[in-house]
Length: 96
Image: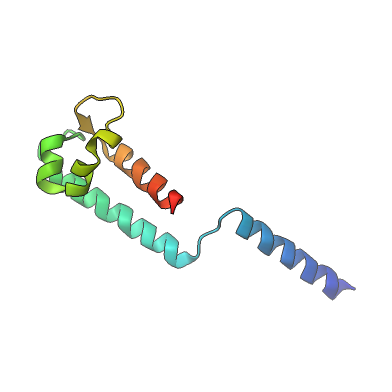
């Protein structure tokens, strides 16, 4: 009886983790590497070192950001920030 309860609890925990969208460690590591690469590329592209990437900076150094610039710059201020780009990446990953 105790073994049956243990198996049942294990099944419930497993199902709960799956339902919550738990990612395998490889996916988490891949996502972390992607974010680190994004941060590095953003720092290189941000030639004014003000934490804001203009359309021109994006076009010169981050073509995918330039391609989606208007989608990222929702407030239409003429620049995008790293958190805005990260948010778009996370939304894209969740949509897959």
